[in-house]
Image (tube, rainbow, N blue to C red; front, side, top):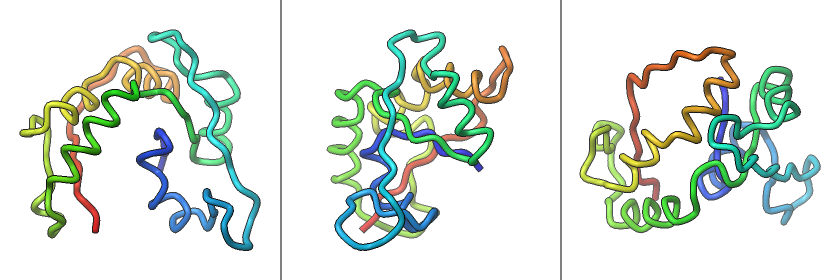
Length: 131
């Protein structure tokens, strides 16, 4: 499994999944801070970020998705009531921001870097509102 995320999407899921406290508000393992994505749309990850994903199974990247898209997606998801997994939003969805994030060039380029391939096909993209 891989984690490529902006900190807004990872705050509630990464600590439980990896036993880490990103808020550093309680005793526990050391805080892991995200590293910044590169400005290059074709090569947005550093060699160290790619190595982290390959060696540790995850990488925490900030700035991979433009902030305005992250904010718009948060607003749209806030209006989506939590529900069972079958009530998530799938691409294409009614959320313009989520559609744009799913098909944005920078995350696609990052995945190509991680997988070491020039060819990539998006098969599925989903989002669920969490309570």
